[in-house]
Amino acid sequence: MERYFLQLLQNYNKKSLRKSLAAHLGDANRFVDFSLSSGQLLLDYSRTSMDRQTLSSLLEMAKKSAVCVERDRLFRGDRVNFTEQRPALHMALRSDQVLGNLAADTVERIRQSRDNMRTHARAFAQGHLPEEQAERVRHIIHIGIGGSVLGPRLLIDALGRNESPSVHFLSSVDAHKRVDLLARLDPAETIVVVVSKSFKTGETLLHAQRTLQWLEVSLGREQALRRIFAVSGNQQAVDTFGVPRANTFYLPDWVGGRYSIWSAVSLSAAAVMGEDAFQQLLDGALEMDRHFQTAEIDRNLPVLMALTGIWHRNFCGYPSQAIIPYDHRLRSLPAYLQQLVMESNGKSVDSSGQLTGYDTTPVLFGEAGTDAQHSLFQMFHQGTDVVPLSFIGVICPDHEDDEAHAVLLANMLAQATALATGTGGLASPEPADIHRQMTGERPSEIILMDKLSPHTLGQLLALYEHKVFVESVVWNINPFDQYGVELGKVLADTIQPALQDSEHCVPEGYGLNAILEYIQKKGR
Ligand code: F6P
Image (tube, rainbow, N blue to C red; front, side, top):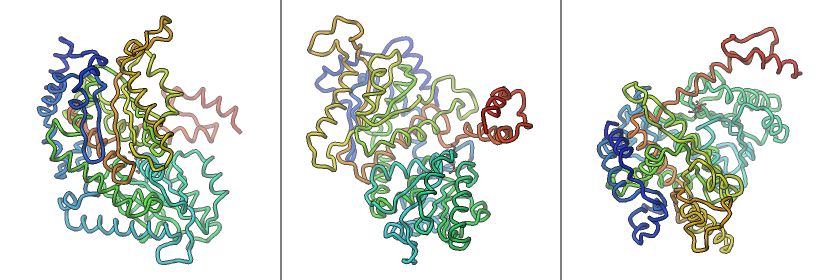
């Protein structure tokens, strides 16, 4: 199916379809033709070099790449995760209709898990264990990594409203944070939520063991186990670890880690944002699912966003992309999207087992504005690489300082304009000094949310999920596996003994023995 994609790429190489970006902005219809809204989200992709002909070629390519057919297979529960032979049905966590495609016992299990999550989130929000009002909960230690932490962290930063319980995240295996944290907390007021789909992830299990020991030392084994919870798809490993079944939440294998924000993985976040707000998040995502499923391809937000990404990556050859949310509450969004995008589409082998021969996902990175303006933007304006930007703004803030908000949005729009037009395109004369000149012609898209609410955040995250899916269809790769992260984990297990025992060497082929010797000399 990527034949059409390749054909278009080749044609593009022969005959440039690119037109000056700044020139596009002079077109009075540009915004109307190159923007689209759905629900409370707007995508403005007018500051790109795509023209009408380019766009229609890309849309044709999307049609011929069977984007709609693949989308329907995704929602139907076909085994779109073809390397692991399973469906990718995270949408079932927000849609009873999609859930209905599954076996009755699975449906029952998911519903129970959802109800259970609500009951627990409510009790934790009220400051106690479920049905045990005397057992206080003021702190939640959430242990997990990758998709088992990035979603809940984003939700709490964006939508957390309750002061208590406070949630503390332990992810990287680095013990500094854990040691500091446990020294400050009272085990009798703390619960531990261990989130791991596999329940095999080294970092998570190490933190979980140490934290359980900490509970046990103060409270004894029985009380400690009442304060530890697990969210996992590996019941056997959870049993072996010792978490009681009543404290365990089920995570099905057809929900990938980076798509698990909609599940009990977000238990601690639901306690902080409120169970109703969590439901609104799911409803917002469901609204985007329906849009993706029903909107015409040329009025379909995930499709248009994906085509913009493909245009920049494959046709313009830009190696990276920056996500710049102009809202402090969305400061964790770049990290969340990094995993979603790069772990999903960081692949170079296609569905037939051949090397793709074309580029797939760009490097994604970002930071909230205007902080980013004072660190990243110099390179964006004058660096040798062009970095397409995604600006994400919120029209109505949740504070009363209208002036500050106007300054914030003005900065976002100013940056988008300056990147597009450069110094030459502005009314004032181009500076004579070449060091002060900016070439412009640097593309960006703007995503505007009417407000930041659970509903709009749900829409936004589902938009990105589907955008990643559409890109994967055009690139003919599997966005739902992540074998690339395995090798490093295996090697770490073989290297660790050499760090703790100077008699232990690693194979010569690692090229590590000299640096290991250095570390051993310097270490305690
Ligand atoms: O980084 C690899 C990965 O498997 C991610 O996909 C996942 O989100 C993370 O590790 C954590 O995995 P688990 O939830 O199984 O501990």
